[in-house]
Length: 93
Image (cartoon, rainbow, N blue to C red):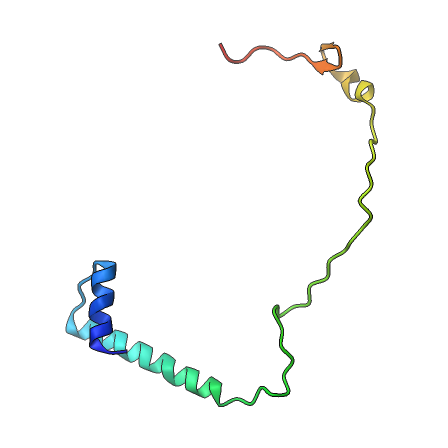
């Protein structure tokens, strides 16, 4: 990373870094570049590509429509119903 890039980043992020801080940023990104070069040296030709580290297994079931309860059974405990609808007190005036 060059000082010109740091200057542009300062403007974009509305920052003001001291010279010492700029040196720290440059040293940090230089270290990351060294890490990247070290990773690029690793031979991955025999490594299988993957998207996730852990295998993802999707359990698929039949999508069937079923109604386990009747409306009357569900409304049996309701204090009041009217033509199949629950009656509730008015809460908004």
